[in-house]
Picture 1 (spheres, rainbow, N blue to C red):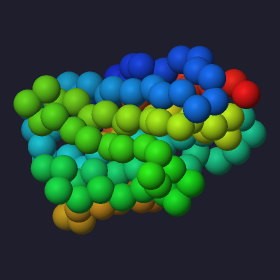
Picture 2 (cartoon, rainbow, N blue to C red; picture 1 turned 120 degrees about the vertical axis):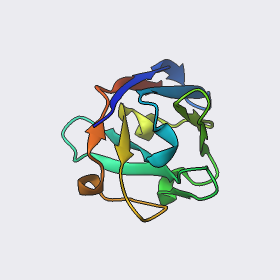
Picture 3 (cartoon, rainbow, N blue to C red; picture 1 turned 90 degrees about the horizontal axis):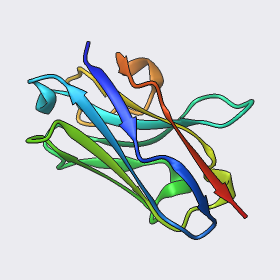
Length: 125
């Protein structure tokens, strides 16, 4: 397993932007498929975005397409989630996750073996 720590959450007005970062404590970062999930109060944790080992493949849930962008810097062992045009419905705790897999994209929670503690994102109307 790899240790993950998210940062960059906070309070923002609707229409604003935030950039989340997730730092991984591993020398083999490029061997992991990385994902972002979120969990709103009273709801299940849901998939947000995923990026393959070198960043050549990305995938997003429909509700964030065109607004969020996932990227990674393997030299810095870090994955990012740029969130633009934020809406109150994006309010949630956001989690970073790492997967050891032969598939370039993973969207199910069970596919990820390592998780960060999460960072709160609150979007006010």
